[in-house]
Amino acid sequence: MTTAVDSMPRRRRYFDDVETVPVERLEAAALERLREVLERATRLPFYRERLAHLDAAAIDSFDRFAATAPTFRKADLIAELRRSGGYTTGIEALGEGGAAAVVLTSGTLGFPTFAALGWGEFDHGSPREVLREFWMNGMRPGMRVMCQYPAWHHLSMLDNRALEWMGAEVVCPWGTFVPRFVDQAIELIAARRPEYLLTVTTMLHAIVEEAIARGMDVLDLFEPVRYAMVAGEPMSPGQRRLLVELLGLEDLFERAGSSDGLWGGADCPAHTGHHVWLDHHRVEVLEPDTGRPLEPGQRGTVVVTNLTLDRSLYVRFDTEDLGEIIPGPCPCGRTHPRVELYGRLADCVRVEGRLVAPYDVRAHLDEIPELIGVPLVVVREGAEMACLQVRLDGGSRTDGLAEAATEHLRASLDLPVEVRWGGRLPRRWKARMATDNAPDPIGGGKWRRR
Image: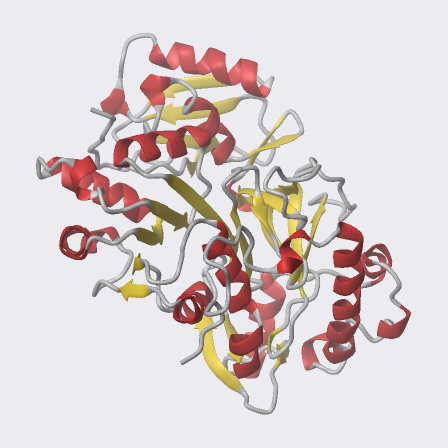
């Protein structure tokens, strides 16, 4: 079977010419796609009233589109799902072939919704984005790739198609990405010796922890693995550096996005934000309370509009994730926008009027060698706090370290900060949020560079 890469020069730097098209041409082409999307969306049940005032042909800029089309959130889809009594919510812009796959979205509000992908989307849509990301981040035809992603997630569907096009040799362990299946993952890495690992961040840490607990040489275990690409939570620069060194990787890449909205992107070898392909998605960042558009470099809630059809279609969907558009050109030469995500808005605290994400605390504390990867919890006492409160894993207690962490965070964030030791926390890199007086979770275990 002929694949999408059969005729590609093996030493080509970019997979698609569109990756480096001038921004003006990208914007013009994206605007044409937007008009097609809006023309279809106005005939869908969910959007019929919301977009009734909008003339798709008259939309001459994304600014005008943003000023006239309302945003919506997951709670709106949940309400429609409950009314429909099925998996549809009225946003399904499917072709004649109907749905090729129906996937679950995340249950961030305690109630997962569904999304549909059509046959045309699988043949000409989002898998093309993933193929670009794989090529951008070192994957090539014939590589042995080990995959650990949840089957319910749309990214698994896209990865499967892109890996088929790539002509990769795929290794899929039984079980899932859940760390309790870590034994099978270690055995497969040792037996099948993959060159590329696609997994979630927590699972990669679980593999490392378990290998060290067994007394294995981690560098030897990962000797065949050249690259890893992880998803599931923001990764700090300190975390990336440690894992690359500890595992002997050529590079470690991060994916970002959400199943809600069916969108995403990956960072490139420059590691300066995640490229969001403008021929597939338009991303905005808005001030969470007012909906005011924010400039690149300003943080707010990320809003996404899909620019392909034959799928569940999200038009100005407020993901309720905290993020920003990275200003300026990327050193890699790609001209598509870059977005950085910092976590759910619901997990942030507001201190002296500023939103602080658990990732902010994690990233700055990972700048202190003794605190790289030490579990922590950010405490939220209310909607507005006078002081940022952080609890460190009590099992990592070292004299003077909480005080050093306090001073470093105060200087880095320019906010009042109090860091103290708490109870023992389970090993994880993603900083967690806790309400005031929440019990300390029990657990433990830790690993460091040897």
